[in-house]
Amino acid sequence: MESWRTAKGMFAAVATVPTLWLIGFFIVPLGIVWLYSFGTNASLTEIEISGTFSNYSRALDPLYLGILWKSILVAAATTVICIVVGFPVALAIVFSSNKWKPWLLLAIMLPFWTNLLIRTYALIAVLRREGYANQSLGWLHDNLGGLLPLVGLPAPGAYEPLELLYNNFAVIFGLVYVHLPFMVLPLYAALDRLDKSLIEASLDLGAGHFRTLLAIVAPLAAPGIISGVIITFVPALGAYLTPDLLGGPDSQMIANVIERQFKRANDWPFGAALSFILMYATFIAIAFQAMKSRQAEARQ
Amino acid sequence: MTMLARLLRKREPIAPLEYTRRLWMRTWVGLVMFFLYAPLITLVAFSFNDSRRNIVWRGFTLEYYEKALNNASLMEALLNSLTIAALATVASVVLGALAAVMLWRFRFPFKGAAEGAMALPIVVPEICLGVAFLVFFAKIGFPTDLPWPLNLGAITIAHITFCFPFVAMVVRSRLTSFNREEEEAAKDLGATELQAFRDVLLPHMKPGLVAGALLAFTLSLDDFVITFFTSGPNTITFPVKVYSMVRFSVTPEVNAASTLLIVLTIILTTIALKIQSRMGTVSQRH
Image (cartoon, rainbow over all chains, first blue to last red; front, side, top):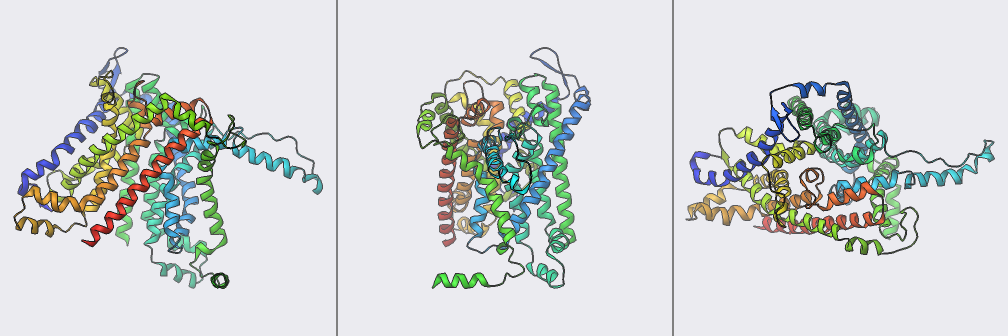
């Protein structure tokens, strides 16, 4: 690496355009939103930057604090389910034969290339009242229900479709569906680097598979697990499309409230404050990850 | 003979670490794959279903593809999306490559801050970036009545902003394998700074540029949230159009449109992966 002074012309040639672009079309737009978050609606179209904190204090209103807290809970639940579902998959890929490994990795990555909107739409068709899930359950109900009198139980009534869509269940289901690859890939990367002889040693010394997993594998793979957690948690926290399309009226997340302030309620200052609160929450999560992975590296 | 060998191998006891050969593990992986793919496969399958209600299989038809392809506003949205993606890809590759060279080659004041700012568009929640562009373009009074394709300018600018840091990341990781001595040798042999860049560094960067271009194109083509905030009534993109159709109803026509987009993305990605792997082997031979 050389100092910029040794080749000033070259440095200017490569640095000018990307720097100006980033400032003009990223820092400035975010800066305007930041300024608006301290503003008030002067008239229908004008916003006066008055330096007020009232937008932030309004975000502390129980209604909005509740939505923020709920978004955090939903994102956390999504992350936990993704770990539980994804960990065995990552483990299976690590220990699969060389013939299968690239195919399994491809199978996990392929949904990445499929549009988020389309994946969400696919879930609507599965979960809605007359969707495939209810159809399959109804079929099971009708066909197996006839067997119940044989074992002395009363025959069940007609199948009542489950309400699987437009509620919190659907939102978490959708978020897990979308974010599972985000969790599996970092877990795979971390587990693949693991010294397998340590696992063998633990098993030889009499620990069971579950105990080995908790006492040996999990601590050693901690940096990968943490980065998987953050990579899943951060986009789930800011998710807009999934709660919008799969959620009901009570499963709004913070991003939906932000969207409403800008597109329908037309309260830009308040929306700006909410969007910066979401951004700060994201940065805290990322800083936490950086701190933890540095600690984990220092320990090894 | 091979059948016999395979049967015999099956009898071998499962070693402690052969997790993949355990039944519960296979069942688990199978269920997860079912979870990931069943919705998508049914979506594709039912785009060929000869029934408006999209529930029971009534026979094969291409009727809904015909409908989707004859849907003028859907095709216009597709054209918009492809145009934006192409423009955003070209610009992102140039910007990303420049940024990668800057961060890889030079030491300069506030480099940490520059690196952080460059990674920011990747980590900032999409919704925040979306509203930032909405506010920004309203504030500077970006003209909304330009003729096509200039009216796609706002969306394209937004797409370049979130795409080029990804390109920079990919290209920079490719640059770490570059041997600086090659460039020094070229300069010793009389090449100017520009010639050394064009004939030595650029060929080495090529696989990274292709991978970055692919990434940018897919990101741009797939983006919904940021586009949703920057698009106007005359600048509908494919995902935004599909979104309005999805909100309205679940019909085979939406399935057909979705299938078209899935196929398009898979074809593009496959082509790009092929190019990339061929270039990878070529550059290794050098």
